[in-house]
Image 1: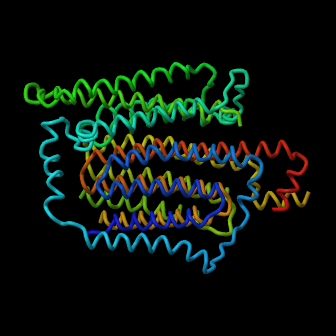
Image 2: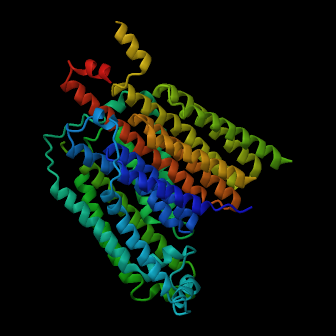
Image 3: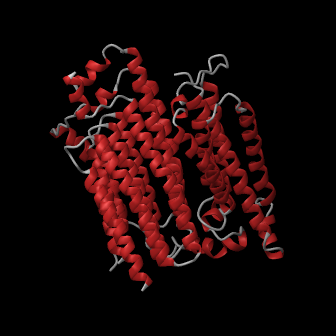
Length: 320
Length: 105
Length: 100
């Protein structure tokens, strides 16, 4: 008996999406969005893209936190918990149903038209076969996704790293932060709970060891620099919940992130664009793996630093 | 033989979790009641389920990783429950019995 | 046999999602979210056990490690927000609760 788990997960995903669309209260939307991203990661896993699933699962925590901070900033005292718990009535009028159904029908029609004219020749799959046959010799590693992202598609990776740097710089530029006004009374409540403090202290080393494992194992199994960096950034969130934040070198971490970005740009220029990895696999089989591991470690370090700065600028020391 | 033992243990875990689901679907009870019933029984179900899986796979790498996940869940699941209940209590959520007591005063 | 367990776990997942959808208070939804997380971890572990692959267990680990932090942040902000409100309307707090 073979049960259709992929279809079940996708249908649950659609149910979550409909719930998100039809609710109006912010906290309900955020909690339902947590379920949505978890089930989305599950269906990514079933559909056969484990790297995306791991990235989605690691990002969902950060997405939740950033959404909550945005809502707290924009609805300061306007929407209390009484408003959240009040019953809402969904009215089904012809106009609202049409507003939802028209884009959906348009997308379904477009999809149907595209399926009619999809070229099913061999020309589509030649490049895929070539990549899958040659990635071990060209770039190295066992994970095809990691070697494609870090080998054939280095430009994309560089641009994504640049995007993260730009967003961190933008957040640091926009946020108004003075040392004199650094009052942190938001996480003082969790300090009073002995259970939470003890448990966080137990969990913190497990998280950082697991992140290091994902980064170092990224060229062999699913995972890589981005996912491991996110896991290490989760460690800093746990640290924020338990300890004081007065002695954090945030400016130094920002400078370090930019330096690591420079290293990330230099390393592919030296290794990939000159063809060193291509020749090195024929001489010494381990050399290309060294390139992949180094890139993963650099990217993981940079992502951890970037999300560290984002989190502490955006959540911890911002006045709101 | 070990297969059937492991399936029996996993079925026991599923039964525990079924009690948890019944507990959370009680419409007329309070929030604290549901939280107490559900999350305790859910943790017990996870423990039983993972023990069954460990019996199924014997002594192997798989079992080691499963034990690691079990330890993490055993630490984190009660923590989340504790934080939810604490937040509800501190945020001023009052159960029905408590409301009636206050009205009597 | 494992397929039956998977189907039962998906049914539990669906009922936990119902609690997330209909829960009267925010904390009800949070406990439902916690249940959904544990059920998804169990589904992944069963999936790995069917396929006999160990690398799928990393996903269960990262779900367990990063899923709880969002829930804890939501609870933290909820209690803080209500405490701030209670400080502002100290006199009206009890009457508001009784009117609920």
